[in-house]
Length: 424
Image (cartoon, one colour):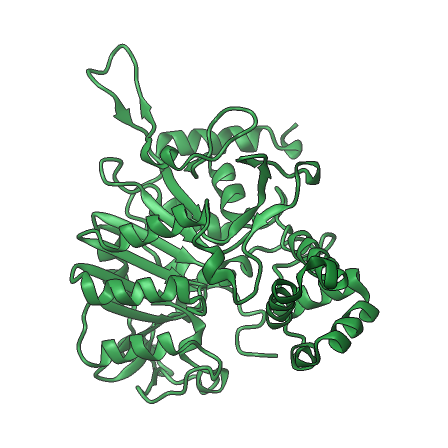
C-alpha cells in the first residue's frame, strides 16, 4: 500500500514548497501540550490560491489524477482506469491469441507486451498499419479497432450515482467568481463526464462548444457566446452566475462524428467515440478539428495578461500541452502558475511524517522532467510559480471559497432534497 491509498482528502495533506527551507506541511507543528512549535504553510497556500482566483483570467488544467477522485459505490465498483486497467480491458476483449499474433508479426512489440504498455503497443500497431496498409495488415487493423472500442467502454465509468464531491467543490469555487470577469476556463485531457455530471448536480451552466439544438452539434464559435438574464425591470442584460467553459483536449466519450459534423451522443449507433487514444501520434492528432480548436484556446489563454493557471492531476507527459505551458511561462511575465501534484515527493519522503521536508527531498522517479524544471524556476526566485504536493481532491478543499452560496444555489439544493425518495 502506498502513502496515498485510502488517505481521506484533506487540506492537511497539502505541502507548500519554499526555496528557503523546502516542503512545509499545511498544519502547524505542535508539542504534546498543544503549543505551536513551528508554523505551517496554511496562510501561504491560501494567499497563493486567492491571488489566482482573483486574476483577470483563470484557467484550470487537469488530467487523469482528477478522475481518480470520482468514486462509485460498492455495487458498481468501477473506478477510473489507469494504464494497467486499460491493458486488462483491451486484453479481455481482444484475447491473448490476438496479442500473440501481433507479437509474431511485429517482434519489436514484445517489450510493450511484456510491460503491458497499451500506449506503446498501439503506437507500434499504428506505425505498422501505415507502412503496410489495411489489406496487408488486417489483423493489426482489427486489433486497433477492438482496442479503441475497449478503451472507450472502460473510461465510461461516471454516472449520476458517482461521488463527484471533489469536482463539485472545485467548480463551486472557480465558476462562481465575479460574473463581470471572463468566465473560468477548465481544460481536461480526460474522456469521462465527471465535470459534466458535477456541473449538472450543482445546476451550473457549461459552455463546451455545442449548440442547444437536438442533436447538439459542435461549433467553435459557441465559445464566444455568453449567457445573460434579461427582464423588463433591468435596464440591460445581467450576466448569470455559475458559468464556466469546458475544453476536452483529448475528446469525450459522448462525442460522435456524423458525416461532416461532430455531435453529442452516447449511442454507438452514431459511430465510435471521438477520442485521441493513448499512442505517440496523439501529438499530431491534437492538431485536427475539433482538437485544434481546444489547443488553440489553451495557447491563446496562456498568453493573455494577468492570467492564472492552476494545474492538478495532469502529469505533464503530453508534450503538445506541456510545451505551450513552459513556453508561456517564458513569454508571459504576468502568467501565474500553481501546480498541485503528488509527483514532487516520493512515498518514502512523506512517510517520514516530518513537518518540513528539505529542498533535496526526492521526487517520484517516473515524474515528468517538467516537474524538476518548475522546481528549478521556484529555486531561482520566480515568484510566479507556486508548487504544492497534494492530490486533486486535497486541492479542492484547499482552494478558498471567495463567493458565498447564492440564493439560486440554496433554492436548487432545497428542491433536490425535497424530491429525494426519503423525503416522501
